[in-house]
Image (cartoon, rainbow, N blue to C red; front, side, top):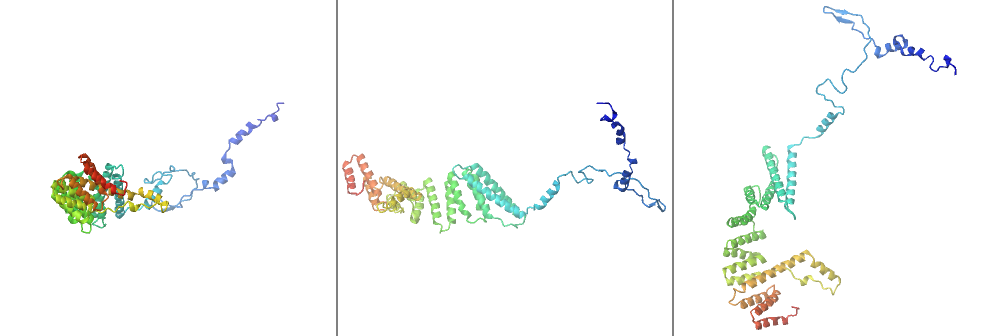
Length: 423
């Protein structure tokens, strides 16, 4: 390879370097023409007329190259002080949201409070019931509901009574609060709440709440005040609500027993037995006359107890499986039925009360226990509960054996030889 200049790959580079990079724009005629015809190179003119203080003069326009336009303020900022930096335009979106959201009217606020009260009442009731009641939570919810209800009343008064207040809701709130107070054994607070309700004439039939007040006085041992409340409630219960009137009368009788006033208690129980007797009242009436030692009234009360009808017959509820094999399956279902269990329980209670009464009064209705017991057996045989006479006869035979009166025991047991049963 030779050293000829033409063979040098870098040859001539230094010769053109200055010409390329020492460019002079003034010497480039094409560039100067472009500048003059573009906005960059537009001529600036001065006004043809000007005011020199004395007269209006004229001036020849002068030419000057305008300076290139440049940024005169930071990006994102404004000359207005109220406008903040907001590149995502969040302020405009917020304004749109606020415009779409309507202002809550007083009526809507009133309705919303009512809805919240209903929700609190439901939560309070659920908390106070069930297998594991939470009485603390129930009381807290009841108090909050009562507070919101007072707020509703204030809103109504401040608005001049424009809104129609739901007094049924107020009654519900106060009643639940008093009931929860009583369950929490806060009896004074419960009584104060009930008293507040009874003084409000806007609540219909509010005097029936005196039954609840009587129950609280009973828990406190203030029997005289409890009887007073029961009687005041009894005066307000209409005659067509017979069941409620009899239950209140029964409570009054129980209080008289607690106070040792057996004659007054017997009067209450006699009234119930004459209207619509039940097993519990019949037994209580017998106990009152037993405490008073009145033999004739004891016998009368025992007969009243036997006259109570129990609509239950085991034989009527059993289908004969011989006629249809499927009846056996039906009989099994009946035995596990809740209604069947309740009826059997009621029947068992009736038998228990009658047997207890017979064992109790046999020692007082006659000079000899055997004679008194025999009277009870014969009376039962002629009653609706004639089947119980068999049990009493067996117990009578056992009593004779305990007394070493074997002949009487044998004569009593011979009674069963004539029975066509498996006794």
